[in-house]
Length: 108
Image (cartoon, rainbow, N blue to C red; front, side):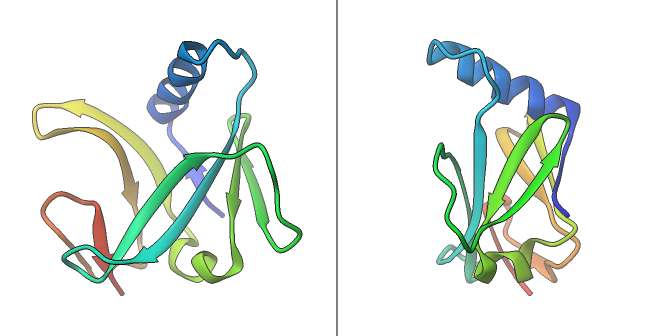
């Protein structure tokens, strides 16, 4: 399962309203090769689901994950920070054995 904090949900709603849409979108979360730790998170709005997608829902937000990424993301929480140490979505991933300083890449 992948969960969403209240802060992340609020930011998703805010971004969606800026696009002139009121309904909560599907969020696609995936893992790609790259970054200083070897793997990078990718987060996008996605209206389409693929037959192989795993779909999770938390706090009304549907989260789409492809099968390959699911192995890296199980148990992850999507959060949003607007503090002094950086602004943006953050992934709290219990599977990551190492994370880079900016939090955008990880390794297992």
